[in-house]
Image (tube, rainbow, N blue to C red; front, side, top):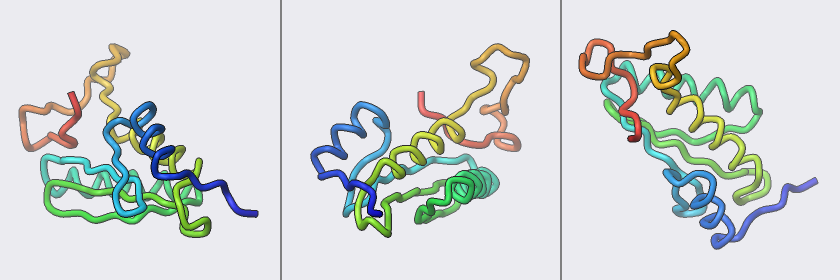
Length: 123
């Protein structure tokens, strides 16, 4: 059974509505996360890896010292499917989670001290 693939127009509409920091490029939906250091980069890679493995849907990842690019498409379906949008949304939720903004006792990492800074969060 093949998953429904979306046209470029449909992908761009869904990204705009659901995942505005993601973009369509060369047949993949992509997101670049900026980090504060290699430590943060590795944490993002491991987070994406865990979520992808749990979902049984595997992204392509490129990384450097202070950034990680995540690329998603359904290899089997040869296009962008609901699985890609679902995994992208979960990655976005987890990587961009800022516990200090929730007011539930978890303070989050200090962003002004590079010894502890993690992801450069979107504002």
